[in-house]
Length: 300
Image (tube, rainbow, N blue to C red):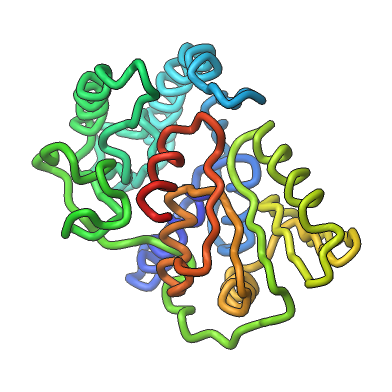
């Protein structure tokens, strides 16, 4: 979902500049982008088949998913080749999809994670993974890094530790809340919890939050991050649970909250920075997700 939300300002800018846009995604990210841009064209392309483990050790789950990820990269590259034979596009902008490049068009790759944090015992692999990632980056004409150029930025080591590829540049933070910093606040809830990430850890986090706040006297809002045609709302004690919120609704709620509880995903960090709400955030990294564990340390 974070990769979809941070593409919102890019799409808005392209539309403003008069470009004709088509969006490629799937699942909840596709539904979110349809709600943000209902008049655009959409193509559905399955994302990589990745699922986290229920445990705090994700290396085994990622190793198990690795063949499916490689197959997904090959499939999406072939899919793009077929699409470009059927239709004419001048440019392809890919947010962290490794195979969405083609030498016949100008292709741009978006990532904040040029280097990948590895778990203890596998730190020696970080330079190797960095070099492998660079090989994918060099298939593209440009690499956009959503962060500030001055170290450490918001991403710290992820974008600033190693030398940048020649075709890479910092473009500042990307957030669907760009331009909503001065929105009217909604202070109905003391705590706002924003759910995100892969299953089963997303649902595990949801259950933990319900158990923690259901008997509190103050009002809590849990945003499940599951966009649907119709917003679903339920109540458990003083907890309100909603399937999703629009960008304007979410900005108002976050600005009005006294505390914000969420995963330490990078797109979430950019969103809160865009609203000047980082100081209210209480982060809980996805167990075993090394990037979030690192960003949690950086922003705690």
